[in-house]
Image (cartoon, rainbow, N blue to C red; front, side):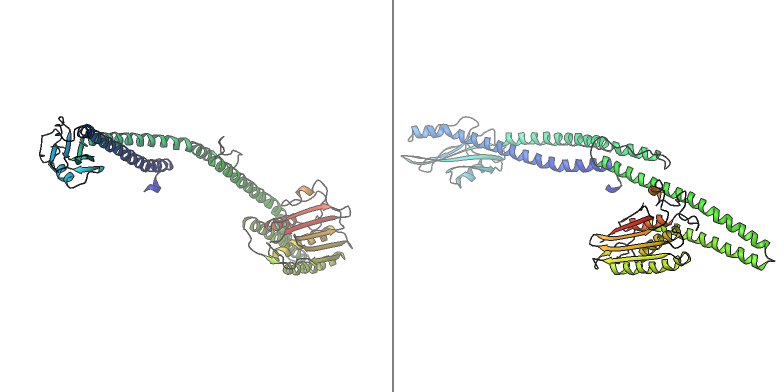
Length: 461
C-alpha cells in the first residue's frame, strides 16, 4: 500500500512517522522530568513542615508539642513512644508506624479512610509524600513525620499531559504540512524535467533542464541529457547508415538488374550469356560482402563482446592472415612480408581470435588493393608488456591528408580512391576501428611519404 503512494506522500508520511516517534520520546522525557520536579517540591514542603516542630522540641524537650495548624499533616512520637500529634490519614499512619523515619522521604498511597486525629481537608487524597526525621534530645529520641498531598502535583501533571498532547498534535500537523511543502519544492525540478521530456523530440537538440543547485536532481538531469545525446547520436548514425547503405546498394542492384536483362537478351548466345552470368555473380558477391560487413558492424557496435584471446592465438591468426594476403597478392605479384615479436607470451586481450583475424584481413586487403603491380606490404605485430601493436605499411599512393580524419567513417572513400578498381564499399576501415574500439584499443592511419601506414593498438587485460 505504501509503495503505491506518490513520492511526495511517502516522504511526508515517513517524515511525520519519524517526527512522531522523536516527539513522543521528547514528551515522555519532559513529563518524567516535570513529575520529578513536582515530587521533589512536595518533599521539600513536607520537610519544611517539620522545621517548626524540630525547633520547638529542641527548645522545650520536656513540654508537649503544640497542635499544628489546619491542613498540616504530621505524626510525632516522644521518646517514650507516646503519640504527641497525629493528623495523618489512617492509611498513612499505618505505614509510618512500621517505618523508621531516619532522615528520609517516602511516597505512600492512602486508602481514603479517616485518620485518628483531627480531620483535614486532604482526606480524599490517595497519594502523599511523607518526610521523616529522628530528633535526638537529652530526654531521648523523637520520631517526626510530615505528609504532603500530591493532589496538586497530579492536577498539574494532568494539565501538562493535555497541553503536551495538544502541542504534539499541532506540531505533527505543522511538520506534516512543512514536509509536504518541502517535498513539493524538492520535486519541482522533477516535474519540470517530466514536462520537458514530454516535449522532447529525437529530431531536436533540446535537453532536460538542469537546476542551479549542485544536487542529486541536477546530477540526474545531467546524466539523462548525456544519455539523450548518446541516443540521438546513435539514431543519427543509424539513419546515416541506412541512407548510405541504400545509396551503396543502389548501384550494384542497378548493375545486377541490367546484367540480368542482358542475360535474357543473350539466351541464344552461350558465350555472351556466360559472361553476363559471371558479371551478375560478381555483383551478387559485392552485395553479399556489403550486407555481411553491415551486419558485422551493427553486431560489434550493439553487442558487448565477452570473447578473449591469448597472445599465441592472436599470433596464429596474424600468420593465417599473412598467408591469405599472399594468395590475394599473387595477381599483382605483391610482396607481403611480416615481422612478429612476442615479449609477453602470457598476455590476454579482450578480442576474439577470429575478430582479430578479420581486422588484419581488412588492413591487408586494403593495402593490396592500393599498391601497384609488384608493390610491397609489410605487416609488423608486436606483443609488448603494455599491449598489442600492429602496423601494416604499403608503398601505394597513400591518402589525401584531408581524407585521413574521416577514413574510418562508414562508406567513406577518398576522391582519388585507393580501392576504386576493386569497387570497395568503404566499410573495411570502419570494421577495423569498430573491432579495435570494442577491444578497448584504437586504430589510426597516416601517410609515410612512401605509402600509407595503418596502426592498431590493443591493451592487454
